[in-house]
Length: 212
Image (cartoon, rainbow, N blue to C red; front, top):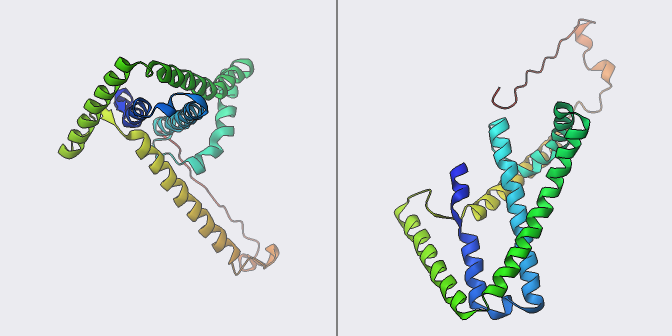
């Protein structure tokens, strides 16, 4: 749902509240480590969410990080083929640099917030805003209303991606075990279809991808 992108992230509300309440999270090495951790987490969520929206819009199916990472090469071939060499490679370069830009911007933003929250008035205003947003989230959860102004979609998305990847990994392991247990595996190829007596066999694969 594209509209959920306009909601306030509950995870960001929690981070702001912690920065306002815990002075050590704003200064020194712990402050820098916290900013780096937040920037990396933000980048991971943004990249995965962008990939999910792309898969849903193009392929019209759920996103699976373990399986869909293999589509990276296909995307590169599509861009260079559809846009042409120079433009396609420029687009690929931009896509590769985008996560670095997101990470850098997030880090700078957190460091600025940390410095701002050293002011007493800013801390009190931030805590008040966080309390209001947390209360709004609690109310919308209690009422069962969806699409509120506060969303924990980032945490739910990471949980969803993890479950999908684990399920796919288990499926790959089961398939590998079944292939290894194939009783026809040791039979030479020329003996597999002897009863056909030279008749031609057509093996057809009908595949469909995306909305088409």
